[in-house]
Amino acid sequence: MRVRVPPVLAAATAVVVGLTGCTGTDTTLATNDDGLTVVDVATIPVAEAAPLYMGIEMGYFADEGLDVRPEVSSGGAALLPAVLKSDMHIGWANPVTLLLASQQGIDLSVVASGALSGDPDAPLPPPEEPTFDLLSVAPDSDITEAADLDGAVIGVASLNSIVDLTLKASIDAHGGDSDTVEIVELSSAEQAVALAQGRIDAAKTAEPFATAMVEEGNIPVLRPYTDTVPGLQNAMFFTSGAFQEDNPEVVDAFRRAMNRSLETAQEDPDEARAMIPTYTDITPEQAESINLPYWSPDINWDSVDELADMMVEYDMAHTRPDPDLIDPGVDR
Image (cartoon, rainbow, N blue to C red):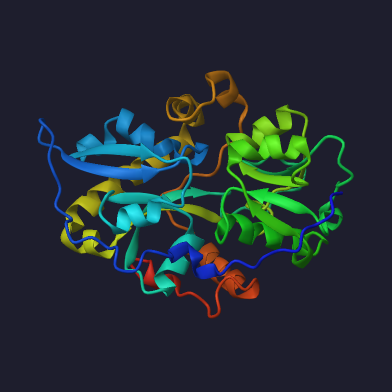
């Protein structure tokens, strides 16, 4: 194992650095030549986002009077300010990022479910069951279980988010000590190279990158999204408070179409797989082999509550974030 470089503690509030004062005031919407309301949606190229594209392709959004136009970013860091500045109308984010932002006084609201790690009503899957995220190590690594990760350098796609939070919880739940690991931020595409070069000891990825890591010979050790909280809500669509207030009918229309898309994706995984190559760099053949998340229009707020508790436990927040601040219904 590599000698560990002493970690530099990143402030959890880094997620909202630069957001103060960036909420926009222009929430007006345009219409296209067919009279549909144009809604720009910021997203990232991950398998979990397939229902959004299915809803566009199948006309679910058009049925609601919407012309939804996704804009793909290589990472999620820029999505929050883009939505808050009204450069984009709706965005894709993980609950931890949204909880941190709301705790800092940022006015935002969840619009619809994005993806879950599994069925909330099912028990946690056994360690050997394939799932859509994993922590993997190189083929020649001496790491075979969580306890072997002590002192390791681990690459993740984003810091101060659901990614590193559930990673720490997974390590501790399976006999390791997350206080001893150094977690560094690398794009999912960079992690395979960094792992092969020995610059990191392990990589935490989600589909479509997770299966690619295994196909390249890397060895799965943990599955942080799926071995910590049953049915973990790992992604949501959100908007700014200003957009929600000024365009409630549009938000409701998006939610109805998105819920329909989520149900279709869960019922027809083959259709979801066929959609993934249209907005990612993977081939249809590769899409056939990846593991899919669980899609449901029902947001698992119980899992969001657990994430809020974990954020305090792992010093990602000084006080417990209030999930009610991002819940438009607050009726749970």
